[in-house]
Image (cartoon, rainbow over all chains, first blue to last red; front, side):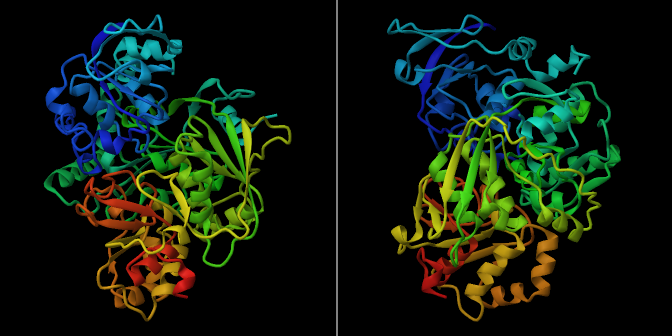
Length: 165
Length: 420
């Protein structure tokens, strides 16, 4: 869980939750069904091309907009292993960690990768390596509390193991 | 030396103080869920091993996004939620006739100064208008609140937004907040609180302050917040809320702010956010003449009585342009009833408006009032992302109700003074 490797899908600034999954799919409650609509309009090639473990890269303010957990759920259930961005909108960030999808703030990541590159992410060590170019970037590892939530697999299993709250 | 947010979160987490950057576990006074995020939250709560919500008197559910249901699936979702409300003996369940959660909540006494309001909807920040610490979360976070009555929060730093100057004719709270968004940008306040102060904010109605706080999330903020005053207390009393006017936790004079954004709005024109970002804001005269196919007046941003009055003043006794469909959706049943009594609804219907039941309607592109490919809409709601209100090839402009109504009349984006 704490070391990941995958192919990059690279997007720009302000990738909002409507781009990730449009509002008309908010009535869905099955994450696998949500995944069939991920990036449907923003990048129609994504849902058929994505493979297990792939990594989505954004620039600043990734996941802005609505509080819909459908957005990280659709990404996770389409196979995405983690999301790397220069910065995240706060609700998306919480939601991603809460459902066990690593969301990592990594300054410089947007310019350090191209679509299709293979990158390796050391979540606890705070290092991203682009295996195609050799570029290596460091980022601030997640706060210990969030690492515990991710290690448990999300907030649901975390709270099942935690009396103190 | 604490900000209002620091004080409220210290109180809610039972600590002497809470400083920006610290993570606290805060007691939640009101937990709110709308229809579209409830089912996932209910599932999360049950998976956390909780058979019951922590306090059936503090959980509020509002069926508002797809109300009434527009598909078999949304009807199923509503049934599941109704069943949960009954099973849990929830005291505050608002069915499809009620309106948008962020209007329903304060109207029914679920928001008070100094309390913590957590909602499974991003525009929960609206309630900062009453001096509450109010923020949006996702469904799993909400599941944890339902199960345990608490949530973890990183105490935010605060940007003080000091707004001064008298608003000109045809200029309203929406114009002010769009201008603030232009200055701060769509991610300029990420993780932070926006504290709105200054003479302009004091002069605004409570409804206007709700518009300011509502759009804090559009700048990435965790919440927007205003200091409660005599207007706040009067509003609460007028809505039958048992408000004891308890001391509303003013910030300390030496509170630490990340920075202060100063804005002089004297002489400012009405503002419009152009496609496809909320900070792409221009004075209305710079884009007047852009033709529109639809005008939508409604939402938790601007579907209140004073917004409908703005539209009414412009449209009464006139006809909406033949190439424009005008959709008017009051934000709540209370607003709808008041607008009926004032004769606003009848005049808007005569002018050619489609008046729909209180709900989120066209704001989030869920069902009614969608835009087709190549169409352009002006809306009083809060987001103009590509595809937000239908086709990704449509364009959405955001404005006050006055600009939307004036534009509906002429068929193109119009300064209200041109049709006054």
